[in-house]
Structure formats: structure tokens, C-alpha cells
Image (cartoon, rainbow, N blue to C red; front, side, top):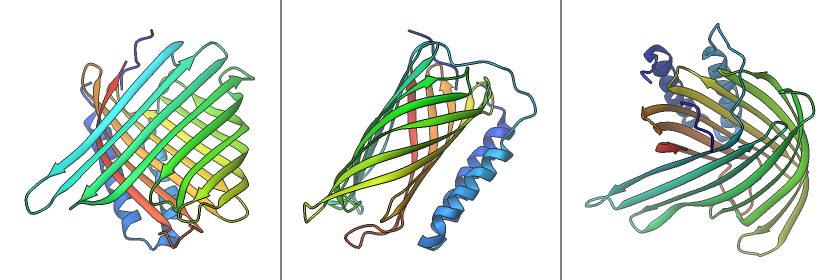
Length: 277
């Protein structure tokens, strides 16, 4: 099993700037109207990614073999306020010379004074096959999600796609993907099925701020005949000791036409401990 790449005394200028960027992005999303939040998030993530860039890059690739990380976060309050929250996320990669498989599993749950305020679980997998070294690749993906507050009992997606890595070094990776796909969902309350052909675009950035800190941003856009959905996740991860790190992240999801009078925008801010092996 390959050793994880480090994620050290941080370069505090870069790390503080990254943390400030996370805070300002969250603040800008929270105070915009629902119709503007998705655009603000995309613009903020793109600008933040550019501002984080450094002048020197060295060519490298992720080592072959297995790479796993598990992130756990939560909170507990008792007394005048009764609050419990727990979130878990795991990511497993397997890389060979021409192929990379990525598997993800995540869940969020929160309860305030006995009332459930968040309950979401998601599992996904993607297999990439290189057509040209470190640049063009094709892939297949599958995703299954259950979100109590999405208006759907569950949603399942799958499809093929093509991706292109504009940059892939030991310090910076930036890639875009496009894929057609098929989605099947079941509407909550009615049990009626919802089937859609959709288009999906993804832009992902992974930037090493220092030997111990990195910034990641993933933007996913899907569109079909009934709705447009975007999801953006911005995170800063910094090593605490050996294989244990701390992660601050902001996730925002936007649905232009949610069912059952559900709100169009959801945001989630998290602080998690990450173990990589």
C-alpha cells in the first residue's frame, strides 16, 4: 500500500489566506438571494483558486496503488440547547499506470431539540482511463443519494464521460469533465418516479499551499429538461500530526426547480479531522 502524499509547518501566509477565503465565501453565499447564490459561489471559488496560485510548479503524479482518507466531524450541545450533529466522509483511490478508480461515501446528520434538521447519505464511484498521458481520459460514473430534505426519497445516476487535465503537477491539478447521464429518482410523499436524461460538467482544482496544507475546490453542474443543479465544495486541509489533518470546508447546493416546495439552496460548513493511509 502506497504511503499518502502529505497534506507541516504551514506557510501561514497561504494558509491564513485560504481560511479567510473560506469564511468570506460562506458569508457571501449566506447573504445573497437564492437566485444569486450559485453564481456567487462559482465566481468566488474560481477567483479563490486563482488567488491561491504560486509561481513555481514541479512535475509529478500521484503514486500508484491505494490511497484512502476518512474525515469525521460533529458537535454536541446539552442544556438550554439540545443539539447533535455528525458527518462522515471517506474517499478511496486506486491508481495504476493508465487507470484511476475513485470511490466516495459520505453522510450528514443533525438534530436540534429533537427535530431532524439534516439527514443525507451518498455513495459514488468513478473509473478513469487515460487516453493520453496525464491529459485526456474517458470515464464511467455512478452515484446514489438519499436526502431527506431534497424532495426525493432517493436519486441514482450513471453515465460515461470524457475529461481533460489542463494541469497535473505535484503542486497543482486542474481538470474539467463532461458527461451525459441518466437519472432515476423517487419523489418523496408521492412515490412517483422521475426519470431524466441530463448533462453533467465538473471542474476540480487541487492546490498544495505548502508541504502540509492544501486547497481543493470541486464544482459540479447538471442540467436536464426540468431543473439545473449545481454543487460546489471548497475545502482547506492542514496536517496536525503525521497522518492526521484538520479540514475546514463549505458545501453549497442549488436546485433551480426543487419538488415539494423545498428551498432552492442548501449550505453546509464543517470542521473535520482527517486520517489518511
